[in-house]
Image: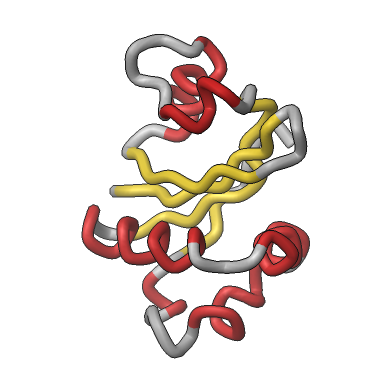
Length: 106
């Protein structure tokens, strides 16, 4: 199982990534160790906003790529209303292949 996620940073910017373990990955972003993404080294990760589960890395990467191409307002709208995934990206992905994960640290 793979997950595509959106993190909120201290400066209110958003970071999108993929992982096989959400809690571990958030911890890595916050601890700023060797596995931290370059972006979250400079922009302190605060919390995970939303995540989607997919069957494999290819699907997770495809969603990540397409979310990264959205405007910030669209990402914010997606966080507030995950059902917009199909509206924003339905021509690029198959939304039914992704299921939203409830985030514990919200």
